[in-house]
Length: 155
Image (cartoon, rainbow, N blue to C red; front, side):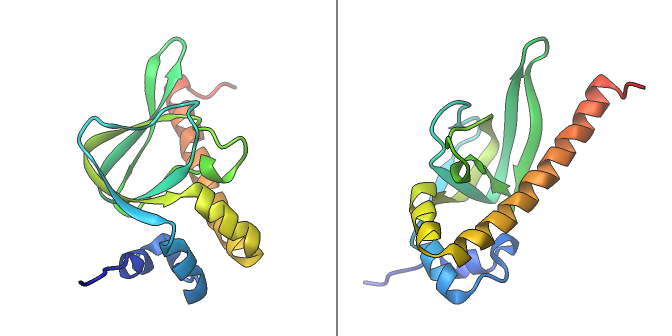
């Protein structure tokens, strides 16, 4: 029987570029392949955030419910993008909804598994924090620009 590992797939992803081999082995042990059909709910606002995803193929829209506008798409992520950072920050709850726009294949990373490994090895934790902080800042800036476009700049 042949056992395959996700390590080569994870290693080739830009998000994981530069991770030490010892960290990649820890990360792989918390990963699995997942598939979603078009229109599937990936996660719902307020639910426990127990994982994050690396999109291998497909597209996912991130939504927020706006009182006067209804459901608003704040971001769309696709191949090579990371989806979800709430697993890393207490209280570990999703702040948005995410739904697939087309059939999607992804790697799902168990947040609880990774948080435990980060507590045990602070070097790993620091690497994740640096990488996720960069994603959070980029996406907040994109959301800010989108809100300026939707609501217009006020003088």
